[in-house]
Image 1 (tube, rainbow, N blue to C red):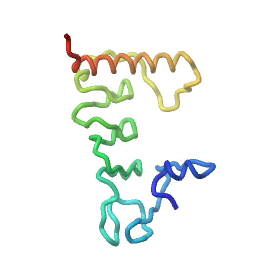
Image 2: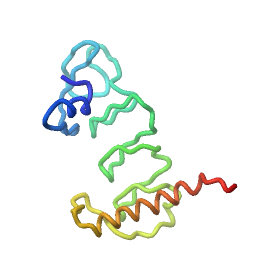
Image 3: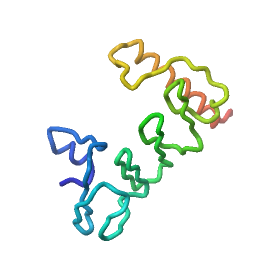
Image 4: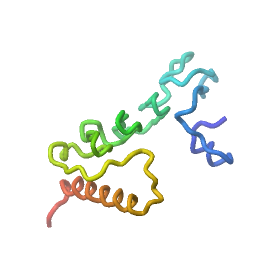
Length: 139
């Protein structure tokens, strides 16, 4: 029994897909139960942030939110990002009314194709530069 998937993965020859986990055991009262946000027996909270779609439990506040469009949890705050269905990714809210759709990245895109990897890298760098330029200080 492991308290987190990382601890499991370090000790076992296989990895845990957290979305496939259907049960958990409360470490405070040893109650085996379906995956949920609080213990059905002692009512302790399993994480400050809980996403039951991803089976993600986190005790550190990172402004996490689940994006239905991406199908994953993200950090940074839902109010600072939006999901662009055409780009199939989350982008900073500042780009909502002014970004150019360059490519639609499907979840099944083969990342062995170097051109797709290069395009993903370029998109990431453009978003990163735009987002962090807001916080730059000119000396």
